[in-house]
Amino acid sequence: MLEVATRLKKLGFPILATSGTKAFLAKNDAGSDLALKLHEGRPNITDDIHNGRIQMVINTPIGRKGKYADGYIRKAAIQHKIPYITSTAAAMAMVAGIETVKSGDVVVESIQEYHGGQ
Image (cartoon, rainbow, N blue to C red; front, side, top):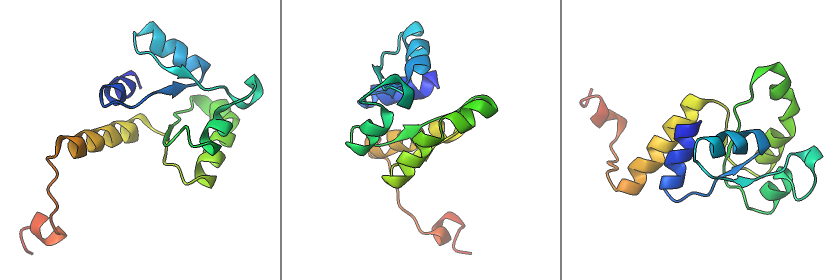
């Protein structure tokens, strides 16, 4: 996730991270702002989602506990129609897509053009 965060920051996106992720990013010289988990106080990550401070969620929970403990984040993102990414591979693909669009190198073609008119 370090590469994803670094590339998003380079593209001009601010990074909000919960305490564990924030500590990891700081240790690797990739700054972020703190987003509190539900039990850590307010305003917390669900408040940030509700108030429009968060436009995309990348949540890659580790282990069974993480998958269920962070369910409220997923629920808030879905309720507010915010993209929710759950794997590093999907996050990398998303960043690559944003980089391509921002570079202006996007070519729109029909599926027939991709497959040689077949």
